[in-house]
Amino acid sequence: MPVLVTCECGNSYDLKDEFAGKLVKCPKCGRPARAPSVATAVQSQVDRAFDRDIFLLRQQMLKISEKYDVGDEQGNKIIFVERPAHALRNIGAAVVTLAGLFFGMPAFIQVIDAMPPSGLKTIVGMVGVFGILFGSIALGIALSVKRHVTFYRDQSKREKLLDILQDKKFQPITMTYTVRDARGRKLAKLGKNWLFNAVRKRWYVWGPDGRVLFLAKEDSIILSLLRRFLGPLFGVLRTNFIFLPAGTDDVIGEFKRKFTILDRYVLDMTADPQRLMDRRIAIALGVMLDTGERR
Image (cartoon, rainbow, N blue to C red; front, side, top):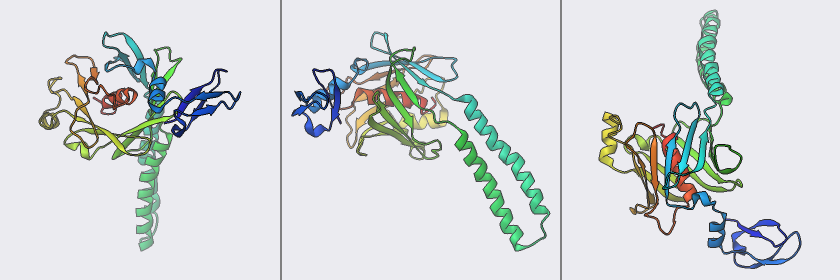
């Protein structure tokens, strides 16, 4: 992770972590300064809004776009989260796809019917049908908009704290998202595989270097199977997740849904006193466990 150095002249600049703890010179004034250690640098770059172990997450109701209020343990609002629906644009993309199928396909079939019977007619017909099908879908995807998630200081949206970027528009099997800090630096990648989630939902957290760092999965395999067959049963079978470091069974965090009509959640990271998991990544994962699962 880059080390941020602030000179006495007011200039700030990033250095590679290999310079952590060493004397460096300001590129603006040439004044020497000691770069902070990696641990100090990480702590100094984390906004105070994320400097806690318990987050209360509440989704705002009756909104087209998905919006969340994140509060501290006392319920004070500390972060506003928004994931725009881009409803008109994405509905328009779906309409274009359907129009291509319902109007393009009959017109093409009429052209094929007018051709004399031959092997070429069969080949052209098959190629044309698949071409219209995949072409309409591709056009719809091209016209659609990615649904990114943005964390702000408050609902005024003047100060951005964090981003979760949807990596691809079309993700039929594996969905991935990139978490970036306020300065656009990559913190982690979040993702899930639809096929693996058929039995027990799980999300993975990869570091900037591509290594799997953490895993979030449903807290109980038995409850998970019951949810598949019985559904949530009006909130009785709530979907809760536990966070674990990769390759271990040590639970370092929990993301639980409260038993209420409204979507309210508690992200509890008190089992991680050493802060193995960056709290920015933890709350980003918590938001995706709701909006990414369409709960």
